[in-house]
Every structure is written in C-alpha cells, then in structure tokens.
Length: 279
Ligand code: SF4
Image 1 (cartoon, rainbow, N blue to C red):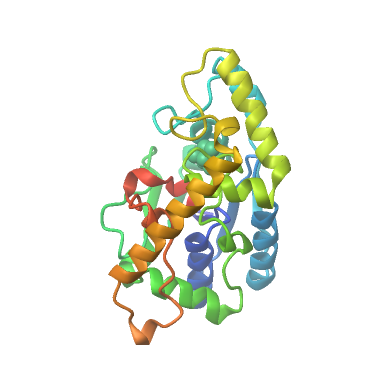
Image 2: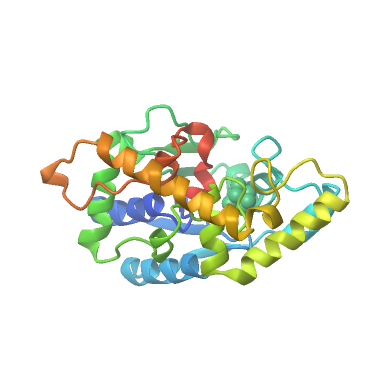
C-alpha cells in the first residue's frame, strides 16, 4: 500500500453527503470512513451513522480516544472547554485521528483526507496537514457543490438528514459550547439526562473556579428557568421570521431553503462551529 484515502464523518450532514458523493463519483476509490467518538454524542448521531454504513455497505471505523472527556477535564483543572480553549477537539477528535494514521505516515504512505467543506464556504479552511505525507482535499469545492446540492445528495440517496436536525443543527457532543441558546432549550426537552449531565459538569467547573459556563454569560441553571426559556423561544421565533422574510425563495430549490439555527443567529461563519465536530 502506498496510499490511503480517509474520510472523517462527524455524524453531521455535510460529511455524510461527502461519503455519498465519493461513493457515487469515485466508486473505484478505496475509502476508509472514520468517526472520532467522544463518547458524549447524541444517540441520533449513532443512528444516522448506522444508516450511512448500510448505504455505503462498509463499516465505519470508530476511533475512540485513549482517554475520555472526564480524564481530560481533570487534566485541565476542571475548566470547561470553550471556543478559545478548545482542548476537547484537540484531545478527543484530532489526537485519535493522528494516532490512527501516524504509523503509515511515518512509513512513507501518503494519506489523503477528504474534507466536506463546500463550494459556498470560501472562508472556511479544513484541518491543516501536519505531516508531509498527509494531504487534505476538498471534493465539494473541486466539484462546485454547495449546500442545496449536499441536501439533494442526501435526499436522493434515501438517507435524508440526521434526525436531530428536527431540533438542532449540529452533531458533536451533547454539551457542545457552540450550541445556541435555543439548542440548549431543546436539548433539555429532547434529552433531559444529557442536559442534567452538562449541568453537573458546569457546577464542578464553577466550583473549581472555571471562568466559563457552557452557554455565553449564563449558567444552565439560569437558562432553564421557565421565564428564561420562554424568552429564548420567543427571541428565536422572531429572528427566524425575520430571516425567512429576508430570504428570496428559489422555486427550483423548494424544500431546500431551510434556515439553519446558526444562520438565524447570524453566526454561520467560520468562528461559529468546528469543521471536525460539526461538518
Ligand atoms: S463537539 Fe464541541 S464539545 Fe465536543 S469536541 Fe467538538 S467542539 Fe468540543
């Protein structure tokens, strides 16, 4: 073997669509699909990956970190990860991937990592190649595929969108700090046990002097107060109505004009999420 083609799945829409696209466009290419499992993912993510495995007719390699979230949380003094100190991605997502390919890279095997950045995301950059034998490619960009094309790929393949899209627009950890307020509210409704777990982590962090809460400027205990929930829901509905009114509907794309939660909040930019966890 002189070359490996790998494709990281986040449990999200775009990377799944890329797997579909690669299979349909390059059926001869031997691709290894992998998922870096933090152990804190939504059950809907595993369900979606199971369906994707069925479509691909191939097992997805689950890469588990050698040390779990709790271990690293202690290592980082019980400080919760945050957009500025994203130790979770480094330790639970990037390290397991690097460990998975490092022997081959060092043995001179070229590893090509296919990443699901779309043609309509010119500002985004993928994981930087950290080894001379690692190459990162962006097939959607190379083929000019945008968001509607990605949704079409999933719909036409019969896979559809992951089920959590009904209430949240990102894969990744249940307690991901990139979540919008409305996603926390919905997490509480959909997976109350995961919300309670996030509250416990937050309490330990605050007790240990962590300056971060999961959600910006308020604790989950404050956020879950019924008045605050009602306020967050009303605010979201207003923003959504405004965003809908602002957007021209393309009749050729009917049904594909869904607005993502980050777009409603105006944060669908590079800083708003993480390629590895949410793509
Ligand atoms: S999903 Fe969020 S919390 Fe989980 S590893 Fe990624 S950035 Fe960190």
